Image (cartoon, rainbow, N blue to C red):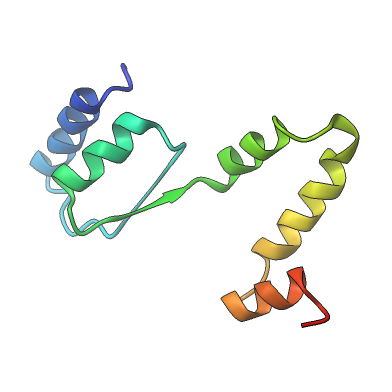
Length: 94
């Protein structure tokens, strides 16, 4: 499947045609075509970047020797139950 907007619009319309309505959240790899199509077919849906793809994107731009440390920090942040708990994890002295 091509990853352009028209392909994603067609796919989402196909899903809608089979009864997939009321979509509130779509999770993906941040494909630009998908991002553009979500709002057109499912205007009430929010988009969230997939955690695995996010980790891969981060890992691709940090030094190789820091990958495990950064991954451990990201996992600790993602494990928090609220935004305030997350900020406390990032900035423990504040």
